[in-house]
Amino acid sequence: MTETGWTLIVHGGAKEIAPDEEQAHRDGCIEAAEVGAAVLRKGGSAIDAVEASIRVLERLPTFNAGYGSALTSEGEVEMCAALMDGETLDVGAVGVIKGVRHPVSVARALLREEHVLLSGPGARVFAEEKGAELCDASSLIIKKQKEELQDTVGAVALDSEGNLAAGTSTGGLSNAHPGRMGDSPLPGCGYYAENGEGAVALSGHGEGLARLMAAGRIMAGLQVKSPENAVRATLEQMERVGGDAGGIALDANGCPGWWHNSPDFAVARIDSTMERPLVWLRKGEDIDAHG
Ligand code: ASP
Image (tube, rainbow, N blue to C red; front, side):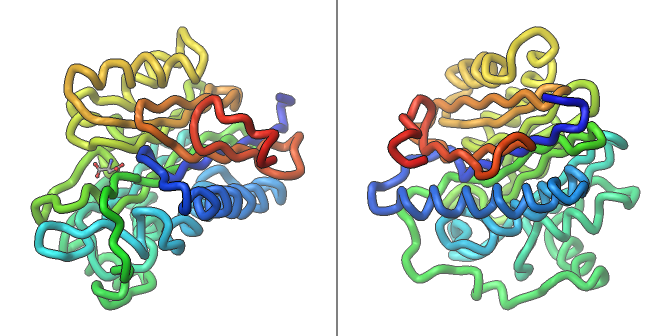
């Protein structure tokens, strides 16, 4: 990694990917990585790249974010999303927001504001004030609801200025109580980014990740461990609280790593030395077969 090198990782969620869904996960993660990489290649910021990548995943029905989100026990889509800028430590996050196409862009609109997290109807009003793309809440529901939805999407990036960013977006856990929020909008739980330290984004059982303050643990781990080992060591602690999870991380120099204890965890990675992203559906997958 040179001083001007950039890097980006995206993930499509900690879950089990059915065989007939594998290609859609590969394609979606590759597209998200390519869109984010196009931002970084032009000298754009890590935060712009993370937002751009996540918008792709929110648009696709394959992932539990934006269009295709999980439904609450009352059959509604309530979404959470967040962005964090590692240079300024600015955070913008929304929870339990309904009727917006791209919750990550509402989080982006909040990033430079004083508030860190807006939720519920207030978040929707904020989205409207900021000119976010609104929609009918039910238009985010896909016809074929997946049986097991647990797959927040996320991205972390280092730009050519050395700035780090992290982001998440999710429809939350299927069948959850209306109003429920997991780790995804909470800094230090579902994500974190700080220049000179690292960046991390997680997916999985939000209550467990919040109880562990998972992103904070991984950030601490990055000081003494490789990114992969930092994520792995924290996810091993999930045994204490229960639930599957996966996480992606960059160290301060953009060295990437990820781990998951879920059956699958689709990840795509690209950096300034690569023309195209590499994609995996699970750790250890032989990517030569698909690359
Ligand atoms: N972490 C998300 C939540 O708990 C869901 C997920 O990643 O599956 O809301």
